Image (cartoon, rainbow, N blue to C red; front, side, top):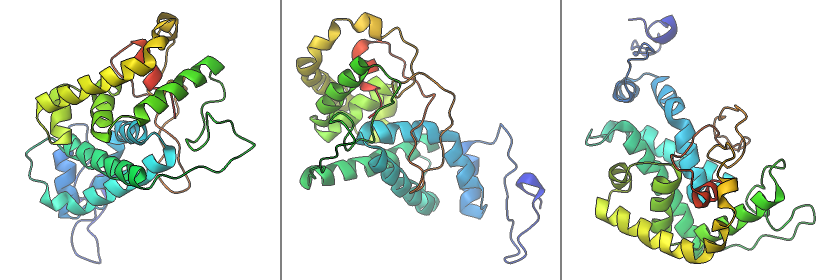
Length: 260
């Protein structure tokens, strides 16, 4: 049997080296089943289909590039190993997002239990320290706004933060977020409402002038879209995703999307 790219059966095992032909109609479930069956390329293709949004969720949830990259790699390893136990009770993309979010929340909880204090660095401002910095081309006012929003988000309980980011920043429907988080829809709504209420008290002053800020064309990270793709997540490559946009134009959400 010839698989993707015309590959022949694996001579070492006698089995197929690639059992799925890469066609647009190939579903996520097809790729996951092919991975379980021994296709060495199927899981990579599955990840590449969804890496923009998976990276965006990891980055927004953790608020830190390195934490996001580590959480995403942990999640992908878990998904790679657990693929055979996928029950099909949710969409494959929901299953992947659930694993990524759980990996991020685990890291956030550990970080809250064992907080670290960044060392002073004369080459960086307080705004960028410990977060991977901000885009140098963004206006200073955007930097200030993003810093305030990041600090406000960091002060939320991790469950509220995850729900708020998935719903308000990433634009997922409440029902989908409920499946990702493994909770009832009412729980998602309640967490979002409590999170918004807490943010409103801290970010109310940002409403002034928000109309101007929300008119700038931005990607999910708050920077102007440049067309850059998302590289594979490796220890030497910590770049964020671009091109994933939320469905909201409100100033508070635009500010939340500012790159950490």
